[in-house]
Image 1 (tube, rainbow, N blue to C red):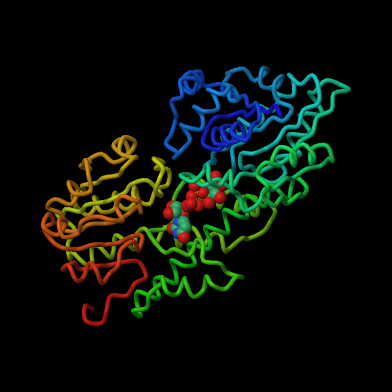
Image 2: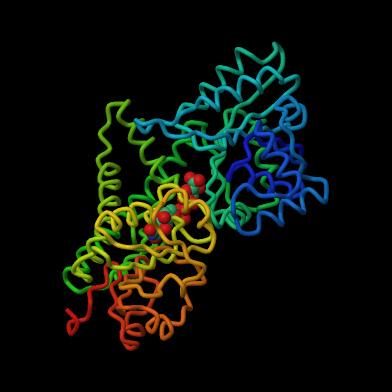
Length: 436
Ligand code: UGA
């Protein structure tokens, strides 16, 4: 099938490359000439495991092409995916300027039937606006459908999530749109939930908000665990085996980060406000998340007595592993707070150092985890990159000034580190009686 994808950010590029890999003819459209030139040379604008190979294969096998022309995209694709940015305004509302501009360009270029599909996360009722523009701008007598097909791609696991989804959500208003989208996704053999457009739009926003709420819930439980000496990991396991709850997204830690959870939670809150609904759960979700970051700072301070002039090694800066994305990363808030208290920070991240340098002046960026811990009074494990799972702690102990590990992701076995002579502080893992 011929499809066009407008916008080559994380969602657009992963979507386009994966559809090409499934055998479709994909044309990627982006008005950023530099980006398109780089993509033509197989240079990725961001780090996503496996993406470069997939793009390269699509280009080599002539199923994936790039252009800066929206009109060319409209000529090529029977289905046109909108994957342009929908950044948050200061009041939390999504800024849909880019969506509107692209839809106007698309509508004016349509000469025969086209299905326009929202894939970027947009507020409920955006589809109605798109349909209205199409009715006003598409030539008379030419049919056009609008659909919503939200994405559920996690950064760092985008390819896996696209190719093996839990479900595909198709919000459609016509039989033709439904059949086209079902045919497009047929190779994935995944369960499809077919709804109206508004419900599909809401499924995406509600899913992200719910996941954020689940994380804030377990982080609140973690606080209780810390006070009473219980273990949040055991609590999560016991809760998660209940199929009504599920184990996923019950990992306590330094709080959720990334662009999407904060943005989508804020957008849902704003939609609710405009409708006169007080969505209190989502307000509390954000409050708990902000506190969770500061609680880690507090725990380091409690363990070190004074932070002033203490050296702290931070392992991992990206908001999660396998990405170089630093948007709303807990590390940024935490490092800034530690520095405000006078701490000296030595940091290492496998992918995000270049971006981090601009955001965190005054931090010493190191070439490895071992270099970062040299002379440190405390090691904070901030992001659970694979390479931090098997660190040689005996060597680390010799390099550090004080053997203190603050494990922001509950990655390590407390006993193993304690046997090596470390003081171990996790999240929601009360210290054993004899160490309190
Ligand atoms: C999220 C959603 O998971 C995707 O389904 C969605 O498509 C995407 O947003 C989007 O809207 O585009 P993403 O932000 O890439 O994906 O990352 P997640 O894996 O969801 O993690 C978000 C944050 O929550 C990370 O900081 C992670 O460390 C944290 N987290 C996650 C926890 O603290 N505990 C958990 O149990 C799980």
